[in-house]
Amino acid sequence: TEKRIEPIPSEEFLVIAHRGASAYAPEHTLLAYEIAQQAEATYIEIDLQMTEDGVLVAMHDEKVDRTTDGTGFVKEYTLKELKLLNAGEWFNNEYPGLANEEFEDVSIPTLEEIFIHFGSEVNYYIEMKSPGIYDEMEEKLIALLKQYNLIYVDKGLPKVIIESFNEDSLVKIHQLEPRLPLIKLFSFKEEAALSVQDYNRLNTYASGIGVNISSVDKHFIREVQQNGLQIHLYSVNDETELKKTLNLKANGVFTNIPNIAVELLKQQ
Ligand code: G3P
Ligand code: CA
Image 1 (cartoon, rainbow, N blue to C red):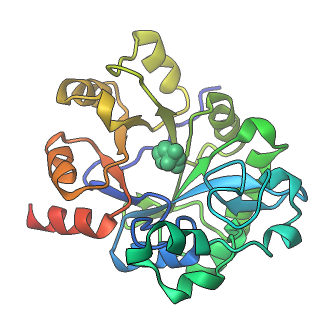
Image 2: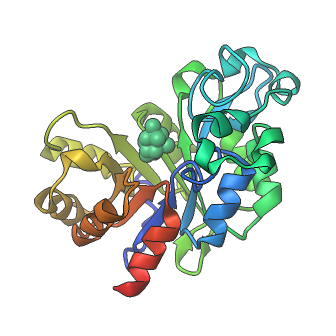
């Protein structure tokens, strides 16, 4: 039987705070998400990994090395062990000009902690980062979204959008919970291109695609939209580039500087 694809209304251009407002605070910390919320980003983006004991946590990399004082794979840490890591000090070391004492004692947030902290006050754009290396990540995510009553449309926008480079994971989510709008991510090496078969397959489960900005032009964006899909562009982290991006008439942008994107949109 045909399952309905959840549409994402296209009236509003989505400002997706990439890893939170990650230009200003360590990525994937509550502080980075709070700055995104204050900036009135449409969505906060959360990359997911999973601990050894099966807890979903916000982290971009499979390993903790880059963004904490620890080493090794997230999946080899229990939540208790992971919580001992410092998730903000690296930012102060990397960006001394932006260093802030507040960043010195932040830990990796679990997805549940994020839901408890923000509730329905923000919209969530969640990436299944490495679903291939974890068991039942999709089931766990959907259970948590249901527990916190986050699967609904609020002021014309879905409270939660799910994204992934992994098509199998998205198809599984669509089968388990067709009310969740899904974005299939692509990273095109050269010029973005999709075939009729690609569009047909995408239209069986996805509401849209997320594409690296370097690969697209206005023509491709229009083609995607004419094929019934939204297109969100990643990642644009500079004001001049954001201005150019808005002219492309895509449906949204991932940005580390959501405050600037929101201001530019207000001026339009
Ligand atoms: O999710 C879109 C974009 O965030 C993909 O890049 O590596 O930052 O997750 P990445
Ligand atoms: Ca991401």
